[in-house]
Image 1 (cartoon, rainbow, N blue to C red):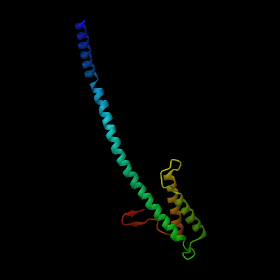
Image 2 (image 1 turned 90 degrees about the vertical axis):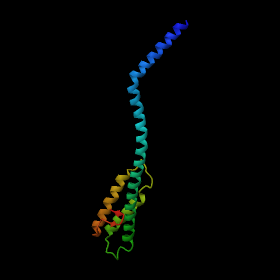
Image 3 (image 1 turned 60 degrees about the vertical axis):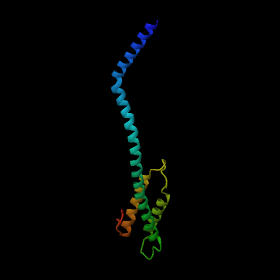
Image 4 (image 1 turned 135 degrees about the vertical axis):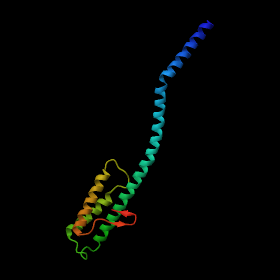
Length: 141
């Protein structure tokens, strides 16, 4: 009995060795994939954060500029010869800006809302006959 156990252990060990040799390529590919996926996820998270942060800062800067633009032009519009139609558009633009969410909300398409704000801003600029672009050190719209 003792010799039959040794024979079974040797066969099992030899079979394990052959299986290891046979499946070594698959095992290495799987381990490499897991390692690459983990490292890629970590790097993508950092890149995604920076992209989102900078894009959010850009949108926030534009919204702040548009809001200040509206508030300035709504102060005593008669003195600046601003029509009622343009005043309504300025007020509407201000409402859109105030309604813009501070946090990412899945129910609202932020980019679509921002495009509406930009389109209305361009319309108001055309009505006021004002240049749309604002260039200052560090800011370009």
